Amino acid sequence: MIFTLITLTTFMLMEGATWCIHKYVMHGFLWALHKDHHDHSHDHELERNDLFFVIFALPTIVLFYLGTRGGINYLFFIGLGILLYGMAYFFVHDIFIHQRLKWLRDTKNPYLLAIRRAHKQHHKHTGKEQGECFGFLWVPVKFFRMYFSGRRRASVESGQPLR
Image (cartoon, rainbow, N blue to C red; front, top):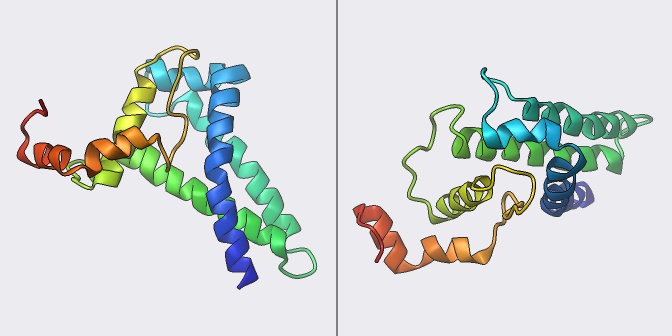
């Protein structure tokens, strides 16, 4: 039970960590790696930005190693929470939002639509400054309101513009 709680807590705390890392590291001193994700200055399938998957995998690998020395301990489950968050990030960000694989293109799920809209708002800025919406699974409430209100949902489903 405690290990499940550690895993779930770590997963949830990763949202705050991701916001900080995205804003202050990716849009900060490692902008050179993240820039091509915003301005599409790459001419192949992979982006320099994809190196972050390797960078972020390293703490998980270390935690798995330390968490299995002398039997499984809490560090393993912290690593598991980070791994599960990373998998969610990959599926939502790379597959759903950026459509690296063409899945869930026509969703009408208000939660997924809100996340997609917030991410588009984030990508509106091609430079490292003046960014917004650095979160991943939780975005500003205004985006959820857009899609959870009945009026907006009816507009989305009918294909008619919202006036």
